[in-house]
Image 1 (cartoon, rainbow, N blue to C red):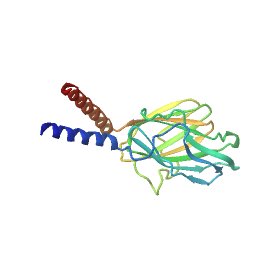
Image 2 (tube, one colour):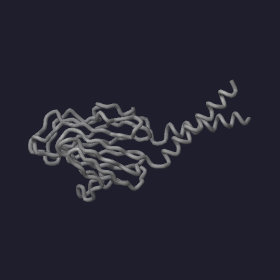
Image 3 (cartoon, one colour):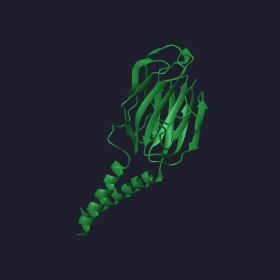
Image 4 (spheres, helix red, strand yellow):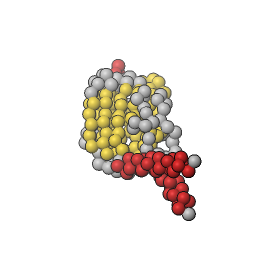
Length: 213
C-alpha cells in the first residue's frame, strides 16, 4: 500500500514539473524563423503565431512594428539566435540589419510564466531599449512608447534588472542597428522549487529501485 502511494505521489510530482509553465509549444531551436521574410516599412505590423519553450518558459505572441523606417526593407526577418538554449533560459534574437535605412523597429512578445530578473545584451552596433509589463495595456505593453524603460543598452553592452513577478510578462523592445540581441531570464522561485523537488523525487525513486533489485 505504501509503495503504491509513493508511486502515485512521484507520478504527480513529475507531471507538475513537466507542465509547470512549459506549455505545448516546441522547444526553442536556434535559427527558427519567428517573423518573415517580409517587407518591413513604417507602421507595418507583422504578427506571428510562432511560439517555443525553453526550460519552464513559453515565448509567444510575437509582433514586429516598423517605427522609423523611411523606405521599405525587403526580406526583413526575425529569428531565434545562436544563443538559444533549452535549459539556460536564454532567448537570442537574430534579425535583418536595417542600419542602412537609419531606422529602428519594435518587437513585442510574451513570456509565461513571469520572471523575477532579466538581463539584456546588445550585439555590435545595436541599441536596444526594453519595457517589461506584468499586464497588457490595450493589448500591448507599450502605452506611451517606452514611457518606462526597464533595460537599455548598446554596442556590445549588457544590463540587468529585477522584474516584479507576474503570471505573464509582456515584453516590448525598441531595436536599432546591428543584427542580434540576447536576453537572459531568471525564473520565478516556484518553478525552481518544483524542478528541484521533482529531481529529488526521481533520485529517491531510483535509489529505492536499485535497493529492490
